[in-house]
Image (cartoon, rainbow over all chains, first blue to last red; front, side, top):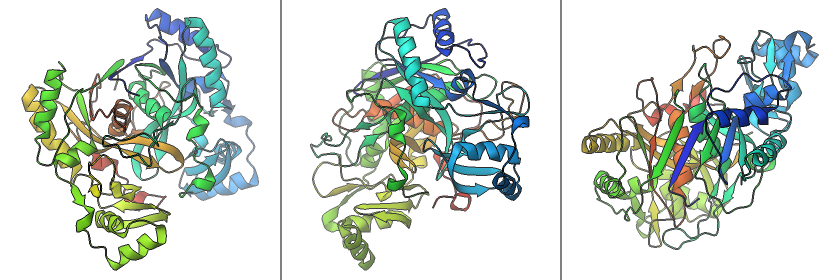
Length: 253
Length: 253
């Protein structure tokens, strides 16, 4: 991480992504057209939405039959029981509920609002967009395809905007990653005065995800892919699953 | 936020900062020497540690007499009661306690480990570094001084690495800011398909803080100031206090 500058470039002009699209191909064409050539060690950050769309993670709300539990919970919080049904299907536990809001533990361990089930940006009413089935696997597939395409060692992060305990506003975090460490452990390194840093494990992929979010926007100007250049690391590659704090270690659920 | 690239540059070769130092002067000289000239709308992110040092927020542990409460709590969690005393002096509430760890609500509202009281990077054993007394005010002073010095409209963020609920690893967040919006509210903007985004308030200054953290490191290679260029915003300037979720809205304390 001893580098002195970073450059982030959004990939411009990407087309709408639809189920079944070859996302690696779309990204490679978009980068090529914009003259963006990744170098060894660059990290491509990709918005969850286009990964989910390419993977067809879309549910037509008209096809959903809510369970008794979803009907009861939907009535309680004032949310369409069919949406609640889809959220519960993605979750292992309801952590908190409030009017129109369910904070759940997603089956992949993220504590998050509505299990990431999104009604916006899907195109057409009554469509719900779910998170990728396995975002680390998605990141790895994209890493392999794009590294081969450009002949470089590329890292890939799939990011999403998450709400946070104690803080207002969302921040980008990594829900999938490949080809880079998700956590960087500085324990055992000496600080400026030669003391040993006691608690210094950095959420490296999350910080990369947040940085890229600054260029992505969420509204009409959406730029769902950002290349980050200038990062350095010495830790071995991991996956974004490393960033999930197990319930057994967690003090806040 | 509709911009297509960002550049982050660490200010190299900054000297050790000591209590009473003119931090704006130190930063201006460092930037000048490195040929870093800020432009209108650039944001300088400054590590909390050097702000705290310049402001003399250092406590010599030998001068601390622990209260009965600090002695009891220190015994309970196995932490020096004098450090516990300093932590409690910065806090309004203990949220969780674990061996050698207190998660508290800092008097400025942050829910954080050990109230930000830091034993590393202070130089000399038995010295504790506290967070700035009022980081938004510190950011505003630095903004005014550096904007005048360079003749540009500069934003300033003071960042620190925070642990998080549900996630492993720290991420940089903004504890002070001036000259930029801390939160950007996209509610009411249309998404790609003309729907209105329902819940989209972005922790803008936190994402900037996290991005800059990628260059700062925490160990011997510390680079405590990073200039971020290329950000755009239309919201009015706020302060990092906007990012603190009031206890009344919070579901997790």
